[in-house]
Image (tube, rainbow, N blue to C red; front, top):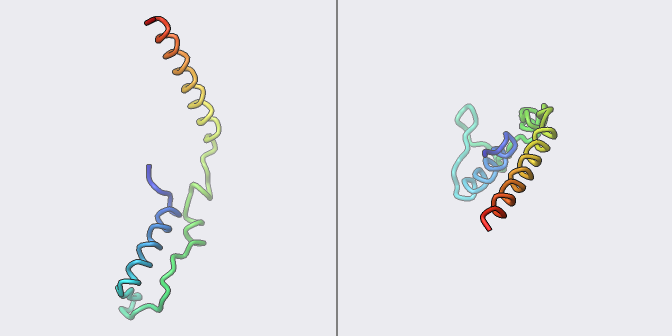
Length: 85
């Protein structure tokens, strides 16, 4: 598993705060120090996170199929365990 775009943003924001606290400069595109605080543009990240903007259409069905498979496996394992007795 890995984070979504928003998850990476949350991690980046935390790392940026730690680096700022340690005195690490954050230069702008011209090499000049950017003013504190350094904030991640979360509205932009939300727009870029396809799991939010274009969620999978089949997630409900997929999770239902996984649940069914899990129950079926449990039933088979229970039946096999009873045969061993």
